[in-house]
Image (cartoon, rainbow, N blue to C red):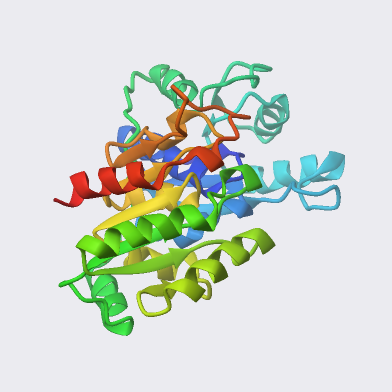
Length: 317
């Protein structure tokens, strides 16, 4: 049996969320699957040790000149899928385009979300409903695996001490409303180092604002903060695995950290709460004065560092 899974959301976190569903499909049919996903998901960097994935094909549709965009891209993707001789496909979206491509490519069994129902689609419930069609009940608790030797090597390279409280700070975010200000992280650091011997590992993106937040924190805590700015995701994963806890904005690193079984405090300022509480390893903090969060909550200025510290203390004690 040759199975294709299509997942066309852009984010790393989105891809991590879908991992349990992909694994469930592979286990049911007793065969590893092929993924068609966007390159922005960077899936090859964190799925290499997942045996239920045998191949990744990157979907290139981000701009009008990309390989799989437009009418010519439709047929190029059709040919690529046809050449792989898939007999079953699971399409984790409501797009007619992908259904037509798969049908024309000759795939006999097509499982997909209901067409034209993208608006306000619950990322986890929609996937669960799709797999209910093949009698699978899947809970969302993604797991990423890393070789123990890789974890030890990372500890040696960075001289990571087991005698300290090693903390990942995921200070980046895909949009400005997700990026908690530097002063909030600084206040948390001040609280933590009063009671604990800590080292902080700072992970972020290359956006100008993200870099300013990084520089602000580093300038104040040079001796206890280590930037991971020059490391790839595959290099950062074993570093995270050496940490006792992670404190992250709603970003790729909150999802990756939780999937590595690291307790992860997720600072939720402007996205639906489900992105910060779907895993048992996640502990969301929402802005003061709010009962929940969603798109356009815009609450980053009301994230309380003392609440972060209180949650941090309860987890590590």
